[in-house]
Image 1 (cartoon, rainbow, N blue to C red):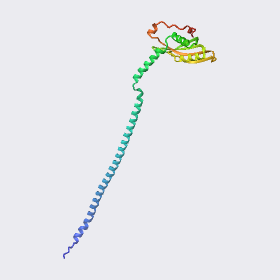
Image 2: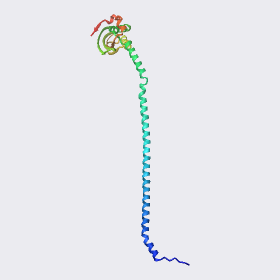
Image 3: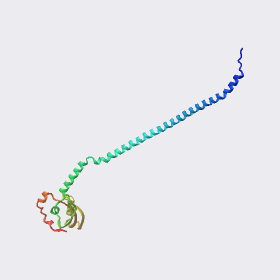
Image 4: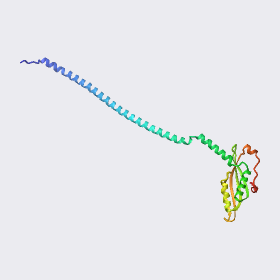
Length: 226
């Protein structure tokens, strides 16, 4: 059996080296802790950035969806607003044609036309046009010049014939607007009617201006321009 003897010199050498070893171990542990701490901080920062990136991505997706919904809503609103404008050229052309037709066919261009038409209406309905006064005032100038013609007429006849005359005048081919009616008398027998109407005189065409004026019915010649 052998034993190893430690000499005092070796023990002293170990004791002298112990502080150095301790310091080195502390240094190693300090560096390792710093590395661990750095890695931990980097991991936390990376996780934070990842979370923030996730939130930003979700926000962008939600904003894009909202923007797309808003764009679709605006598109639908624009389509609805554009519907009345579709075929607008054709509508304007048709409206212009209708207006010109009404202008030429239903508006008189001379007093004689108005008085002749009233004479025919009263004759057809068996009433008498006793007196007509008229006044005028221009309402449009230029090529589409219009003159408002206001008529104040006295008509006599039986009640039924007077009513039929009023209805026929409102539906006549010439444009008449009845503005006031005043009846006096009984429903049986003669009735006196004071009738106020409005029509509009247009400018005659070249052919109309060269044509001789229409002869007015004799019953319409009473009264005159006021």
